[in-house]
Picture (spheres, rainbow, N blue to C red):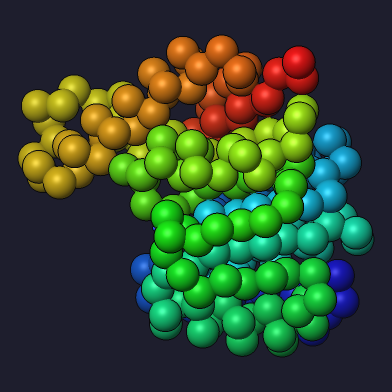
Length: 200
Ligand code: SAH
Ligand code: MG
């Protein structure tokens, strides 16, 4: 990484903090990039680009990696576009401005990274698993939802938050009961699920 890139990334992180954009924390990024290198991942489909931070970090860790990433919020999409351009990664990151649940994606990916609306995880999983290679991985961020998944429901005062927590629990059950995948939830960052498709 050259010095300019380092400054740009620092600025992206600062922008995220100032604008309360929930980008992945260092621990999660370390896990993801180590995973990509270890499994020699070549093509990533990301659901939820926000301002392009995780897509950029994934691309930087492996010279031949390509990322396709979807964002539905226009302001974030525009910011991501700018960041990707500034990093000169337009050739390796394809950014799509749309609701992922209305987006048709062609082609296969050896990693699908789900990091968007937490209540929609099952829908994202089911919509995009056709785009996964035979022995590919689906990684889902925020399985703990800021620690709330392990909290007693009665202590969660917001009805909305309680709803999301329930949906994440449903997603955990969905993953555990899915015979086509082996899922491990790692106690890293905000909880990261790795689901590996069984090569049949
Ligand atoms: N992966 C990013 C953070 C993503 S934050 C990083 O770590 O840098 C989650 C993003 O998902 C938000 O910007 C939100 O607008 C987007 N999102 C939520 N639901 C979506 C959907 N259905 N389609 C596309 N984007 C979605
Ligand atoms: Mg996240």
